Image 1 (cartoon, rainbow, N blue to C red):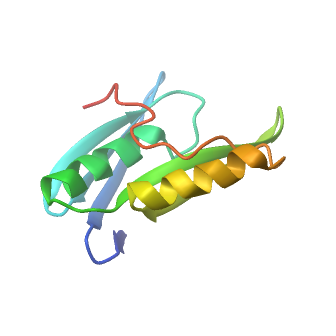
Image 2: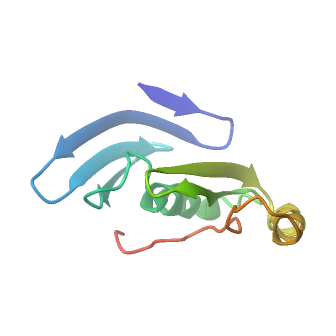
Image 3: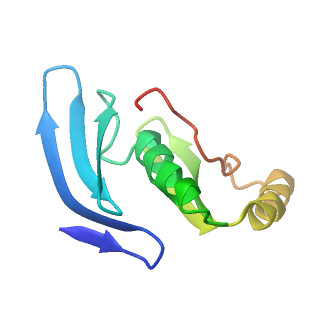
Amino acid sequence: SGISGGEVEITDIDEETGIINTTITMKINGKETSIEVEDGDSIFDENLVYQINKVLKENNSEKMFYCAVREYDDDLNLINIAYSNESDITKINKVLNKSNLDISNFKKDAKSTSI
């Protein structure tokens, strides 16, 4: 399986589940990267956003991936992903702050523990 979106290409995704955590190994623009997903997290993890953004930064991309959480209750949270530039994200966050949508601000590099 793979994801391709112009500036970033993700291929060769493998998943290895251990007792405590899951390790995802992927190639991002041809560079192999391993990310540990913390136990209890969904397959999406902010570490994935961090690693992809690291490659985008190396390629001098103006756009980055940002994520925000929308909380419904204890059992259901939605993760929203935006691929945009910082000035647009700042404008979106201003709108979110004035709304009553219970969506956290979009952030990049929310977690950077697994490098």
